Amino acid sequence: MKYPDLNALLEGQPEAAAYFRSLPDYVREHMESRSGGINSFESLKDYAENLTRGDG
Image (tube, rainbow, N blue to C red; front, top):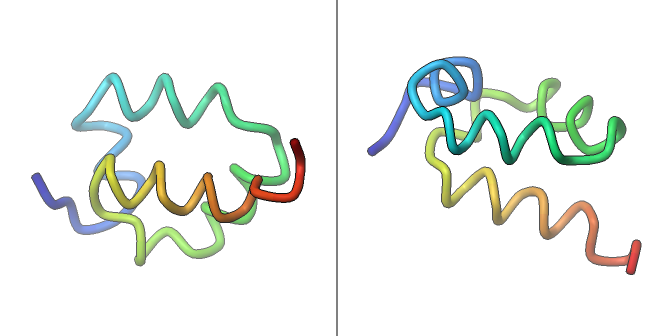
């Protein structure tokens, strides 16, 4: 399901909200600044993976 933005996604999908809360602070802050481009759980995961790719 697609949502208008990150906030709507987090309100509408508890699983996505739990995943978002598990991410490092800098990742969450970056996502919040680009919230319009994150409209599904899949896009949330993809964005997080792109941001954390060099952390491992």
